[in-house]
Image (tube, rainbow, N blue to C red; front, side):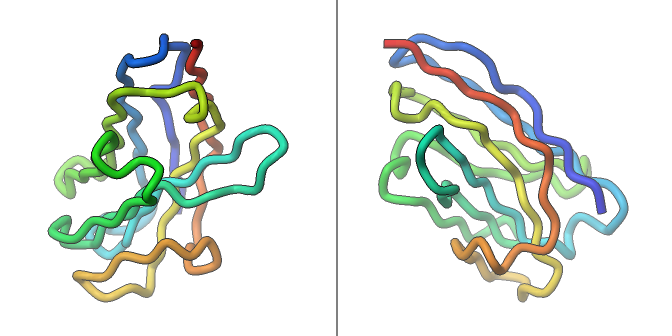
Length: 126
């Protein structure tokens, strides 16, 4: 299974970006998906997750209300719409996939995920 994240860039505080994660090598609807981020000097942290069905989502408190995770199973792609960006959102963003979750489950635990993408850099200037 291969995951490729893209869409990162440089944006001013208060701006928006949309990240995408393209998946190949496995039927996309069998994978629970998540977004994580890793900022300099910090540990990797959970951002958002979406169930295989797309009907269940879960967010870290730091992004809830500003970020929206979605997926298009027909296009084998997951998205992260990021609005009202803050400098503290600056990080490398990774997408990840879990092959064992049930259809409506989400999970914020890093160790749950089996496959990881290479990351895309998001920089928010103040």
